[in-house]
Image (tube, rainbow, N blue to C red; front, side, top):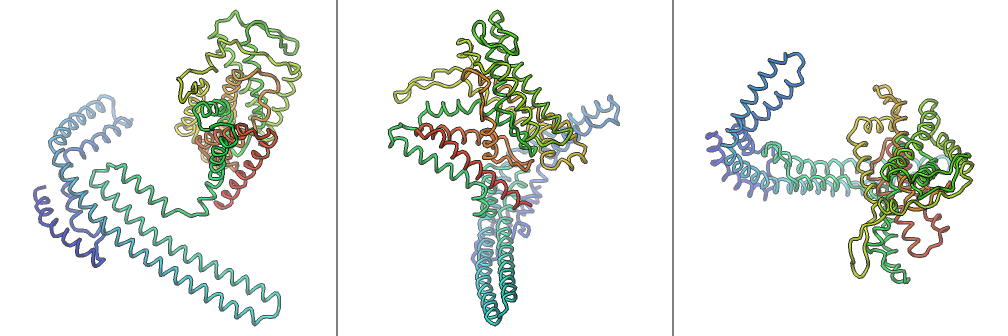
Length: 570
């Protein structure tokens, strides 16, 4: 250790002087070629080997021992105990070396940063020069190709020969552009690699520890070097257009006498309107992830909302169903009525969702058809059974408890209240995110959605994953329908068109109709965008019928962009 420190002290001053002169001559050595960095790394390795490095190795040994079924329990316990004793000793060494480790690491990273400042600048200058030369050469090449082609075409008389010459001209231009793009990409990759080497060197010197600023800078560099304007607009064009539309609405609203759109009460109202729709979008999203869809959402909302309204209605309800009823559930405790309403809403929605799922999973019927069938079945049962009669309002005390608002206070002369329905929507988002990203079922959903044949070969049960997806969708529909009853009097017509809004929200949010692509945050963003669009248009007094025109164009553009992105990937 002392030998390394002596060598570092002797070499450091010379290396700093060398850096200054080498920078002027563009002769700075890379991280791999530098003589001082390996000395720092060897000194740090020596300093850490009996402390933090040994602790890490011993913890890995303990983890391996715990998983090893070939060792007897008593022997395993003894070995683990010995390893823990060694860890305790190593911790004392690590604590004793901590201050020296910190100082040496700081000194090493400081030197690496100084080396990086001049080396990365040197690489960037060299590669930018290459890019400039390649572009100039490309420009000359294009001029040469066009001149030769023009001369050739002018000497031809047959139409077929001229068409062939033009085709060959376009091919030559295309090849030249590809060669330029390849060369420029290689130069950008070299610039990026210099920065990556710098970050990796610092991580190694810090014993694998990352730094937020370095990670952020690295992510930014990756984005810059991979950035292409056409790809950017393909991925974000729709969001940019909608963002501009919202900005225009915010500006126009006060000028037309409709007031300020961006007030807390308006924002909370927008989020409240999004809350129940979030459940429907999260349910549809898992089916779209399987390259499917669901046309029965609106009818399931009506079914669950009617069930909830019947159970939570104050007194005897006037609605009968297929000759049964009317019912009166007021004798039950409030908690019991709420639980019963939620469970029945979820049960009915899951039952019909699984019915559609079974035919899709077993007989390979596209969900478009199977859910269309269940939509018609539910629609007929609800209208025939209830004669279209609304179930009436929910008990006011229960309605306020679940669907009411908390008073926050007065802001700028306006009473601000927080909608309670936002809370279950946030919970649903978290649960959905957890399922999609942290469970085996979530990974299987992506696998089956992306390529069901490959998923089946790899041992995943496509049938049960599909059934699970339909069941999950039904649970979200049932919960959303339960909450929908707290917003309005439920009837067989409740939820009309909700399936289209939910599907559109998912597509706008980037969940691909081609399956296996999408994230929960996409569905969430899509719901807020679509609900916000409707709210803005209503706020500005735009006719409801014209709102359908806006929605139609957005759906058309979103699906078109999704198709173009899919074709480009193929």
